[in-house]
Amino acid sequence: MRLYLVRHGETDWNRLGKFQGQVDVHLNNLGLVQARETARAALAWDPTAIYASPLTRTMQVAREIAGLTGLPVTQDPRLMELDLGDVEGVSGSEMRTDWPEVHRVWRDSPELAAMPGGESLAELEDRVWRAFVDIERTHEDDDNIVVVSHNFAIRAMCGKLAGIPLTHFHGLYLHLASASMFQRAAMGWRLVTYNSTHHLSSDPRSG
Image 1: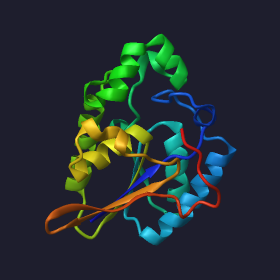
Image 2: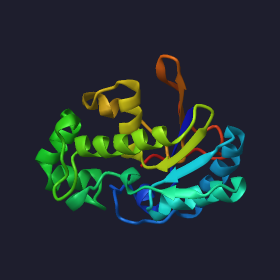
Image 3: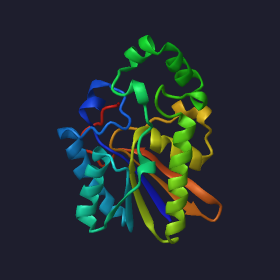
C-alpha cells in the first residue's frame, strides 16, 4: 500500500502570511494552477482512492484529481487543519504581540501548544491518526491512497508514521501543493518521498 499526502495550493491567506486553520478560504489563481498540476502528477501514482478534508481549498485539489482519474472523493472532517480558534487569520507578528505566551509555547514546546479557543497540536495528531487508521483498515495491500489535507495536519500524520514526536514538529517543513509518499512494507510504513514539488511549474510560496 502506498499513501500519498497532498497539501493544497496557495490561498490569499497563505500569500499574506495569515494563520489559516478551519476558516474556509478558497484557492487563489496560483493555487488553482497548482491543483491542476498536482492532478496531472497524481495520474502516475495510479490511485485507487481519494480522501480529503471537506474544506473548499482541499476539495478543489481533490476534485481535480477525481476529474482525471474518475475516482470518487471521500470527505473526512478528521483531515481538516488545526482549529486555530482566536488566532485564525492573524499574522505571526500579531500572534507574538497579542498572544505572547501562546506563541512562546508554540515555538518552544509544540507538544504542549493549544490554540486559544481552538485545538491543541496533540488533539490534531490524535484525530488525523484515527482517520489514517480507518483508511488503512479499509484498503488492500496493492491500493494507492491519495489524501488531500493541510500543512499542520499532514506534518502531524507524517511525524506519527515516521516516529517523530511532536517535540520536533517544527523540524518538518511542508511546501504548498507538495506531495509526500509512504509505502507499507514488511517492517511497517516507510517514508519514501517528503515535500516534493517537482510536479509544479513554479516555486510554491511558503505559508
